Image (tube, rainbow, N blue to C red; front, side):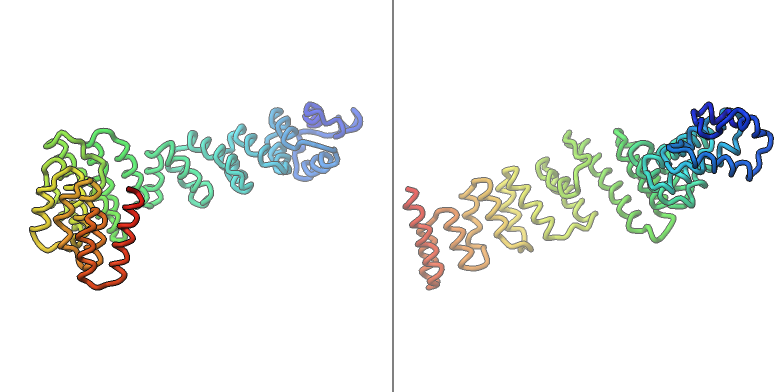
Length: 355
């Protein structure tokens, strides 16, 4: 007698007498009979359809249990029970329909553990929410599985990106380079990925340069940016390699000059800095040469570049920075610019107040 199931679930309101308990034949499992039961259950205040469904399932009435569970309004009760019954795909559908990401993750991870990869991926084809949550989870927890998902879904660019992430987790440089080469091949399969493919090849080239520089100098260059790699080449006396890098990666001339000027001053190579300034006309002017010398508190070196500044106001300001008030005053007076002369007088007055 099916009634026993509901008494087991502690719903005595379902039947009012032993005679009614005996009146339901459990072998007659029709839709009409199930609807009678559902109707009776709805009349019970505070009824838990999930609890009744669980009892029905325990007694082997699986179809009836399923019908009752469908009436359960709480997805938090439905989804775990469906998983318990081994109906993971249905659990996923219910979880997605609820919009509860925790439930979706619960169903997803059960499916992931229980199903072959290809079957699992087919289930996700029409479930964008579940697929997106899987991607978010695997980015943190299982990159290899994510790469398989993207590859099977013909999302080759994203599969390549995962390979790049995996490559950069490798501690050994050789393994990282090998991983990036594989990723590059993924990107090379479609012309739409040309930019990503070139960026990956550039990273491979940069890492190869950095590997060589590390071996030549005993200084670790690996994982530096291109700009930092060029910058620190000058510290190690590898100016030619810096120029090679700039050429290989098409670094704009102005950017290279900025990097070299900053590096030479930073590492105290002021003789080299002066030679560089005299090598040809600077595409960035000579203000940067002056500024880096001042930053390094090398006023005598900065003074060499004042006459090469572009105009009188720049030169007057430079002399004031160097506290060469006589030169600044003379230059301002010769220019007959009242604003410059006033600037110099104000600077002198401030100096006198500090003194």
